[in-house]
Image (cartoon, rainbow, N blue to C red; front, side, top):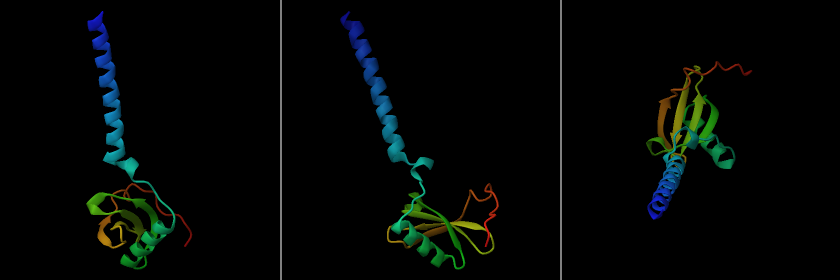
Length: 113
């Protein structure tokens, strides 16, 4: 009986630890879920900084980002219609400007100009 109890306790403990580890990995690991659109004063500031780096551009979305050491990612549509990701530091300075890998799959912009 004592052996059965120990096996059950061990199995339950392993299950709990595995579930907790997965939750921590998801929270810390990032991935698509970590990139969330944000709004507010800081997001507006990130948009303005990104558009200054891409003259004539239109900021489409602002996200918190961790790629390439950035804090912010702003999706900017350039005047020629291409889309770039402008990554900014916490002080809203340029980290990188990259072509948007998702724009090839995106629907065309149908907004009035």
